[in-house]
Length: 298
Length: 126
Image 1: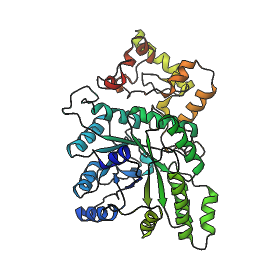
Image 2: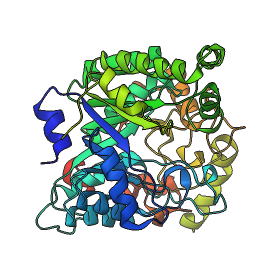
Image 3: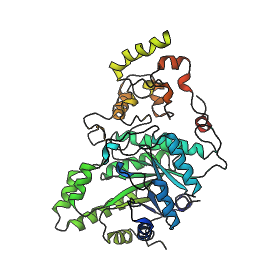
Image 4: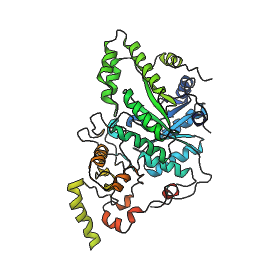
């Protein structure tokens, strides 16, 4: 059983996840460095699949490299670049290498990346991909052909609690749960009221679905403005940007804001941990974790 | 003859009204009378996470999200309850072989309800 699954299903501990940096060269030495940096803080880390529609080292091989060096991967699979055959072979590749957590996503569109001229695939959607993974866990490919023995996975997905249509986001999260997802990493959300309504709505109907909201460590109002303008599905309220912009020490104000959002998120029903995105690249991850009462893992 | 003619007739009617893409396995009744194949990502099970604050599409900023429209129509349009109940059903992957064929014929013959053997393992047969 994966550590993530064990912690989420068999304890009340707060779980912390992050993204593994995309690999564009640097060899295993860069993997070793990043594992050493992330391992003290995180229970499991996402091996991404061409995030923001930019080509990088593949999801499966990144997950294998992480695992080899002692960091538990959550292998993401997105529907943008692969048809149903390729997605199933990614899943089987994960099983072959003992990767136990997979997370199935729609994926940003190709137009979000640096090769917008590429063909977008979307042969299946994220919910179908979740369901196909569940089917594979019964010992069958989508076609019905046998897989022996059946692989076992802890299935995750992603939902955006703060994008329209707001009411429907709860239903969509529940649909992902019905399709087979046991945990949801939530998109960056700078609207605590929307996050609260979402978590309450989901927890009321599916109290066993584990929610992991994303918290972003940023340094400045400019970074918040960038996210607001450039990242699909992310809205940062103007008053939030203005609050950081008006501060004498923007880095401190941005940090305090992050801590407030994190503390609020952790009080919400269904929330079992945080997904931390660090855009500061300084030592504030240490203070952030200690301010949340977390001690380094091993 | 009818088999050849029907796709033309169906397209002539459904293209102007719903911007029909002739997937051959129509689910309009369960998606708020809004065609999910007009979503740039052709998502059949709801919107992606990229919907903009103004409700517009991540891929085509000038266009309202197809699923936002579908959801609003599901809530507000007078439709049979059973159609509304179908909104959250788990729709199976598209059968690409049906592209360009008449969904009316496929509905009558139940060809549009055939799913791969694995799909029915946990979702049951239609």
